[in-house]
Amino acid sequence: MLVDDSATVLLSISGILTKAGFQVVTANSAEDGQKKLAGGTRPDLLITDLNMPGMNGIEFIKVVRQKAELRFMPILFLTTESQQAKRAEAKAAGASGWIVKPATADTLLNTIKLVLR
Image (cartoon, rainbow, N blue to C red; front, side, top):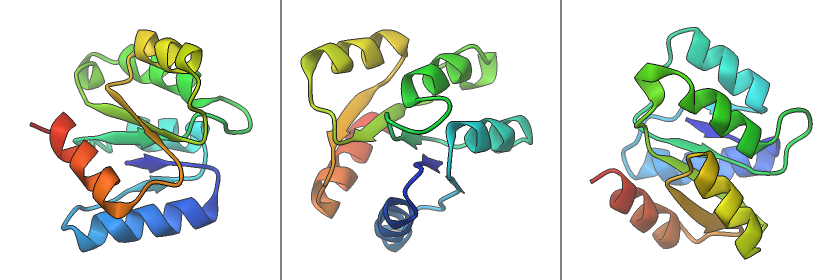
């Protein structure tokens, strides 16, 4: 599942992932992502933006991690933020990894391979 408020990011990243053989479910906000998860979507991996209107990515991760069936799902942040304090906050919330935008296809796919092992 890919969650980002940018239509351009959703299109480009889902294109990279689809081309690499992944099935991608997209959500344009944390709230939309929550609805899809509540509706039964069970992704192997969640990739979320940090800065989104409404609920941000860290708040979203905290909500996702409260669900027993999603507690151990890998979660990656894909964001323009690179500050160490934000990384620590994301990790404390339950993030498995961090990718700084703009990410190359190789960086994205290599990071995904690491967390899906």
